[in-house]
Structure formats: structure tokens, C-alpha cells
Length: 455
Image 1 (cartoon, rainbow, N blue to C red):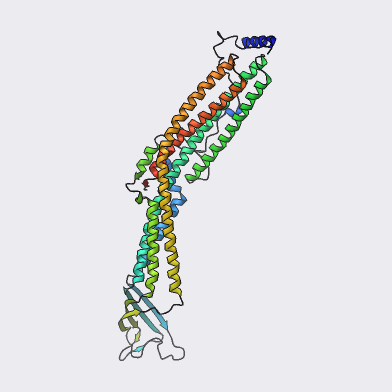
Image 2: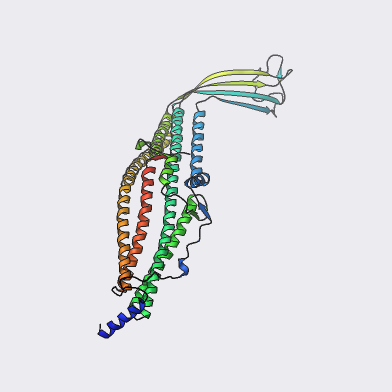
């Protein structure tokens, strides 16, 4: 640089800093205006507390309604299986007329009307049958299978409740994080615009060059892009929260929402498990194995004979008189299966396959739970360490940006350094916001992976 150009630069800097007592003092912050600095409009509906959000989930969740219906179905199947072991009574009333032999009562044995009586024409008969199973291994196995299936449905419902609570907490944390990130993006854009205005003023006074202006304008464009992406992410998280709460619209989080107390709020609705094997998804998988095993045994028991008792009472209308009970029989029924065309064999093979599938699913669930637990416990320590490093990084980036801007204002720094320090500060601040919310989420995950949620 020639002596003439250096003299011009010093003169321009003197004009820029005319109102500043010493060259070591920076210029006051510049005021800039931009339409993109306006915040994203609030969502049509806001959630103000954890209790309100949880109540909406319990009221509007279709997954929860489906799981509750699954419990009701399983209870109905158990009741059907029980009916095969309980007494069964049936009454049948019939009116019959023999068209070829009008004097005979169809279905009525001769003499059934009694002495000096005849069956009416047409004949009205009443038949009552009572049956009771005495020995039926297949029915007992079917009842046991239905009982296990019902227990599995209840465990599935409990696991769904836990997952709904976890999903709701994640949606709330993500929405609050997106709100904060959108706010930080606007702060970053504001700083970029201030640096651009400062560089433009220095350029107009001869203290800078066109390259300085282009660099800071490029930084402004990058900040605008980050803001647009952050706003879209905020809209998406609001939509995800709305779906989690059972609405087809965006739902935001009220600024008064206490996110840091979210872990304590979940502890009031869920309790920690003393044993990992008691986790609902493991219980559901084990009961499915037991149900499949009993179902296979039910099919095998189809090869065995069954024993039952049956009683039939027959009454009919007579002339003269209103009617009489003609017969009352009691019989023991022994049923021996002989040949069903291979149906029983196919049923046994099918249910054997179902049992093996249930066992494989149980093993997969055990492995998934073990890995999930290890990750959740480890994530708390990792999240705490990441927050610590993010705070240090943000503080250093903020200090660097302050010194770089001050150096540029007094003519000792370049526009490239100014842009780089500003970008590093934006990244560090956004990273800190992300790490802080990840820490909250890690504590929630660590608790809810070992919890049971009711209600």
C-alpha cells in the first residue's frame, strides 16, 4: 500500500470515528430495520402447561383409543373361551304340521301325548337342552391362551401410554427449541445487518473497499437463509405438536411454559420401574409367547376325546288339556375325534409357527430394550458434557466477535475476519441452544425408558 493510500485510509477512519474520544473505543451499535426481523406469527392455539397437553393427548389420541379397544377385544375373546367350559342352555319352540299325514304330529313320538290325549294339529313343541362340558383339554388351553392375550393387550396399552408421554415431551421440547432457534436466527441476522451497515459506512468514507462490502453482504445472505430454514423448522415442529395432541393444525407453546420443570411433571404421571423386566413392552412380548404356546397346545388337545353331559326336556300341546312334558332325558356324551381331513395337523403346524414368531419377537424386544436403556443412561452424561463445551465455545465466540468488530471499527481488522467471527458466533449460539434442549430431552428419555405411565 502506498503512503498516499495509507493516508487516505487514516483520514477516512478519522471521519468515521469523529465523535469517538479515542481510537480504542468502538462505534455505538447501528440501528437497522428489515422485514425479516419480524418474528413468526404465533400458532392459532398455544399449550400453557404439561397437564393441559397430557389431558389433550388422553382425550384425543386415536392410538390410545385403538389400544383400549384392543383390550376390550381381548377381554371379549377370553369371555368366548370361557363359555366353552360353562353350562349352556337352549330353548326351542316349534310349530309343525305333516301335510301328507295330517293326523300325525311331526317330530312327536307315538304315545308322547300320554293316555287319553293326542297331540294338537298343528303340534306346538317346546324343547329345552342343557349341556355341560366335563373333560375338554382343548377348551382349557383356549381359555389360558385368551387370558394371556388379554394380559398382553393390557401391557401393550401401558407401553403405548409411556410412549405417548415420551412422544409428547419430545414434541414440546422440539417446539420450544425451534422457537428459541428462530429467535436466535433473527439476532444473528440483526448482527449481520449491523456489520453490513458499518462496512458500508466505512466504504462510503473511504476506509474500506468493495470486497469488504461484498463479504458482509454475503454473510447477510447466509444469515437470511438460516432464518428462513429455521422458521420452516418451527412451523413443522408446531404441526408435529398439533398431531401429537390430536389436532390437524399447528399448535405452539406458550412463552410461560416451564420446560425445565418438565421432568418433574412427568414424574408425577409416571413411576420408575424397580425391575427392567417389568417394562410394559417386555411384558407384552412375554404374554404373546405364552398365548401362542397355549394356542398350540389347544390345537394339539384336539386329538384328545372330550366328555360332557346333556339333558333334554320335551313338551308339547295336547288335546284335551293345555299340554304336557313328554320326555326328560339325561345323557353322557363321549366325543372321539377320528379324522378331519388333516385340518387338525395343519392347525398345529400353523400355531407352532406363530409360537416361534412370538419367541423371536420377544428376543428382539429384549435386545432393543437393552440398547435403549444403555443409550438413555449414557445420553445424560453426554448431554451435560456437550452443554459445558457449548457454553465455553459460545463465550469464546462472543469475545472473539467483540474484539474483531472493535478492531474493524478502529481500522485494524479486515472484513473477512468480521464475517468469520460473526458466523462463528451465530453457529455457537445456535449450538448452545440445541445442546441445552438436548440435555432436557436426555433426562426425559432416561426416566421414561424405565417408567410406567398410567391413566
